[in-house]
Length: 206
Image 1 (cartoon, rainbow, N blue to C red):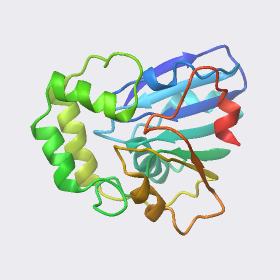
Image 2 (image 1 turned 30 degrees about the horizontal axis):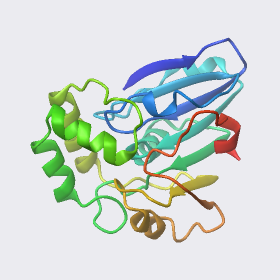
Image 3 (image 1 turned 135 degrees about the vertical axis):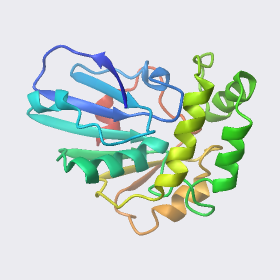
Image 4 (image 1 turned 180 degrees about the horizontal axis):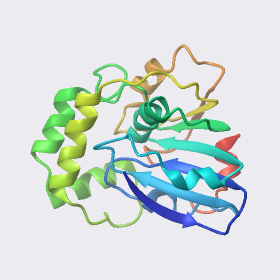
């Protein structure tokens, strides 16, 4: 997995972000906060123990998009204990026709992936900035790995945020996936990438 420090000030608490596929940390750049924030992505493998976490007294997890299932797999593999777990715009069934994205659609995305198709994906997801650079071969391999890994065991998310206008992982698919967790689910306006300038990390952890 790749890592990128969004903030590193030596605080005793950390927010660990499992990002989405290929978009990097760009969706989160306008969210504000004072603590340490470690962003990870690239889920070709999800067995990285992330030894950086050992120095923190408390770790809160925010998982976004395909990062939701990937974080759940990672939690099961590493047995790492987070304080709070939040899912945004994702499900435990990444490659699923009813509770995620149909596997054939993911395969088609991988097989037809180009700089132009990725730019279109970023616009559909709601990324305000230009599409980040993409390593097509690596991004394609990651999608295949996500399909092959399959659904994840439920680690127990404290909060689940579902955007009302998600065109990547359809809103109805997310609602179906989390139908047994009504106490944790909250809907929010916006597209697949619902993060906006001026928001605070504490808002997402509530």
